[in-house]
Each structure stands twice: as structure tokens, then as C-alpha cells.
Image 1 (cartoon, helix red, strand yellow):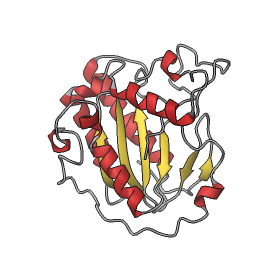
Image 2 (cartoon, rainbow, N blue to C red):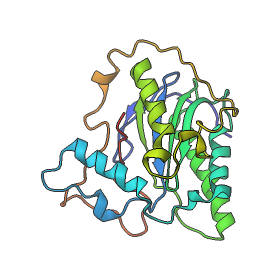
Image 3 (cartoon, one colour):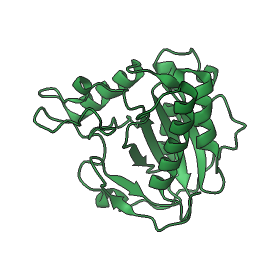
Image 4 (cartoon, rainbow, N blue to C red):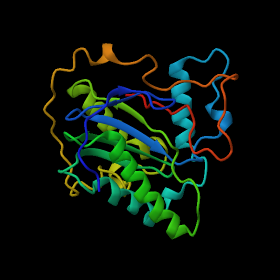
Length: 237
């Protein structure tokens, strides 16, 4: 059970910075531990941050790794985790469960920290899915990417980006054809409207590197047993 705790604000527990604050919509992406090969994560010579980010997005949609979440019974476990507690610990505005990663647009409520909610989603789903697959070991990549929503236009762009991800990946022709997405499941209690507060100043307080951080050729790579990588793709919106 997740208990109420004080929010952390800006912090960097490992490779990626995070912004944990209540009542502010967040775009969060987390992925399977084998979804991006080491060679893909290494930044290329002369590659800009934007090009690096785009390349990682394309690599995710290319379907690297086991892509366990392409199985409907396993994707359903993840969806159950995402919507559990809606209206109490968080409000879910949009989500898409792709074969090897998950996008959500959500607002965490006062006292319910982003890191705790994410840990709950990932630990519950990993345990259930590993049992279903009769396997052990890491399921999710350890860290996650988050980006707070700046304003209403940004909110709508992110929601569209999330719900059209299966279309961009060539999995379906229309967003509502993908079964594990808010574009298809409008009846799961999603909150569509958000009252935006004044976000002026939040960007200025952000630590340097809030977003995808390319790993250079000299950066340390994780051990074979590690579930974490220092890099995580920062989706375009």
C-alpha cells in the first residue's frame, strides 16, 4: 500500500533528473529492460540531442527485445496497474502500452510521490508477468523519463503523441484500434480536463540535462546484471 509522503521537487537519484510535485500533469515513459540495445544508447559523433532523442524513439518503436507487452494478457496486467488508484493517488489523462514501453500522461495527487507510484506500477506488473511467463529476473528498465506539462497546448500535444504512438509505429491504422490505449478505453475513468496552475519559474529551476542525456563512448556502461541504463529517451513533446 502506498502511503502519503512529502514530495521531492527536483532531484536526481541516478542518471536522469526527475520533478516530483503534486497536482501538475506529468508525461512519463518507462520501458522493458531489453528494449534498447547498448549500441543504440551510445551517442554518435556529432549527433545533436534532438537527433539522439529521435533515434531512440524510433528504436523503441522498432520493437527491440522480447516485446512481452505485445501479448494482450500481459498488457492487460500493466493496464490494471496503471488504472488502480485512479481518483485517489493519481488522475490518468492518457496512456498507451506499446510492445516494449509505456507512455502515460498523469497527475499525481498531494502526498503520493511519483517515484512511489511508478515503483508500485512496475513491481506489481513485473511480479505478475514473470509469474505468467515462468521467468525470473529484471522485467522493467530501472529508471524512467518524466516531463512536466507546461500549459494546455502542451497537454494536448502530449496526449495526441501518446495515443498515436501505435499508428506511428505501424501497428494499427487508427489510434482507437490499439486495444491498450486511452484512445480505445475511454471508459476506464480517465480525467480529460485539467486546471493548469502558473508554471512560470519551474523551467528555470530544472537541473541541467532534464531530458534525454546521450551516453558518450567514454561513459561507463552498466554491468550485465544491472537493470538500469543512464540514458532514457525523452519523447518529442
